[in-house]
Image (cartoon, rainbow, N blue to C red; front, side):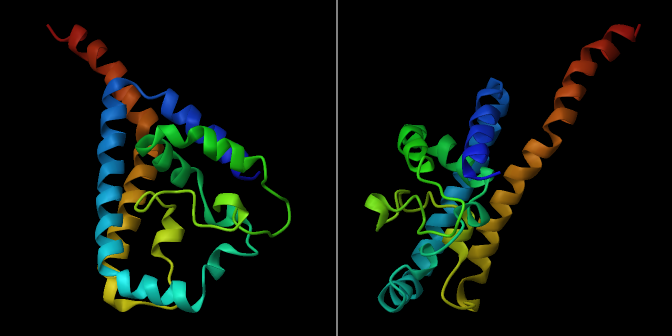
Length: 172
């Protein structure tokens, strides 16, 4: 379906949140952000080596929708809503065939997304397996997993809140 569909879905999910849900999602996204900060700090030498050796090869000749998910887009939109317009403009350049990442500024780089507001796969992927930052990678992945579970179980939580007043009305 492509990233455009994922982008629209992410926006709809954000708009549909009530105040309490928005607060929970913000807290989850802040945790992801903090995990990305720690990962970036601890992986700085690894990232420098990746950039000097590969020069962003992982952003070239890809299907962006295979790397970037609606959860990544949701995370970025929650944390940086001011980026929505720029992201929408990039999505107009999405191609059916492999191409360079559509989120590279001017089509060549650097990445449009600010440091620590990167899609999960972009922030946890290095040129090779890096055991020295496995714990930090796990924290980032765990944060995105919490975000997904929040939305997966959201209908049940809403139903529970709706039923709660009915149950209390029955009690004598």
